[in-house]
Length: 186
Image (tube, rainbow, N blue to C red):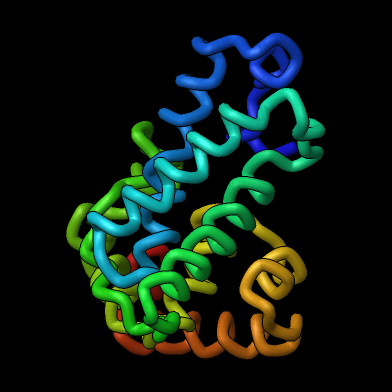
């Protein structure tokens, strides 16, 4: 179970509204970011995420608590977003605007503390220049902590494709950063 998968058993067991609201607060930013990568804009992404949470609340007595809550929610977002696009006569293009500027972690990690703000800005800019699908895979692996296999299943790709896209992402990020970080820690 990931660090985000806190114990929400009281929600699943007895419909604890406070536990449900906490689950929504914890997962909403990353789910909205992921939904935006599929539907293409923030407003529709918010609608998709809201639909998923409403459906979970309404069907909570019929849903078996998942082993990996984070993965379960991402899978639900993907399916709901694709259905949303289909019902509106659109197709997923994976050329989303990525207009949601969300910082997934409120507390700084040790890496954030060690890396200067300028270097962190360079890294974020390099990530934003990645092709949409490559960026999506990179964020799911590096920021959300999914395994290559989980990302492959989630995005209907082969594990080899995820591996190739991660290699491309890392090469492009290092190339964009040049030697800045390499010499910072020598």
